[in-house]
Structures are given as C-alpha cells and as structure tokens.
Image (tube, rainbow, N blue to C red; front, side, top):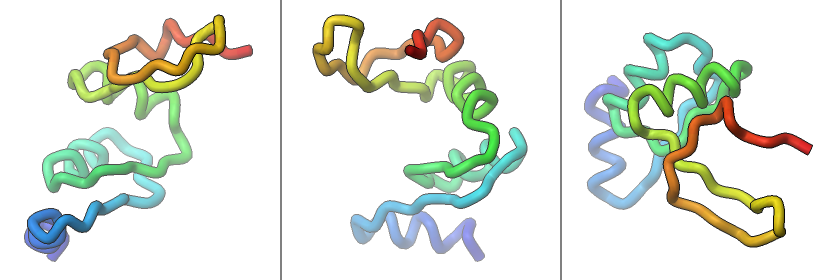
Length: 81
C-alpha cells in the first residue's frame, strides 16, 4: 500500500516521514518511495548511508556560529561539542 500511497500524497504536496526505520533495506525502500524524513534509532548509520547515496545534506551552525546548509558533508567529519 505505501508504495502507491506515498507518491499519491507527494503529488498533493503532503510530505511523508517514516518512523523507526532501522535497517539499510528499509532506508532504501523509504527513499525509493519518496519519503522526506526518516526517524531511526541508528542516526549515525543512517547519516553514513545517506552520505554514501549522495543524499546527505549538512545543515547547522558552524564553529563561528554562522548558519549554513545545503552542502554535502561526510557525517564522520562532523564536529560535536
């Protein structure tokens, strides 16, 4: 059902988010279906997966407190303070 339902919602401007998706096969399916957000118990693994697929977009605040976004960034390079 979701295979047809998600594109149906997207055509109407309704974004979809998949909750508690923890395995790469599930992430692949969610991306293929067109979901716009994935909630997971494995955020580091999901970030690596999305980067590997060219889908990871960095967004946040840099070291000098400037807001940035839209640049592809390897999640393993992220600086956590």
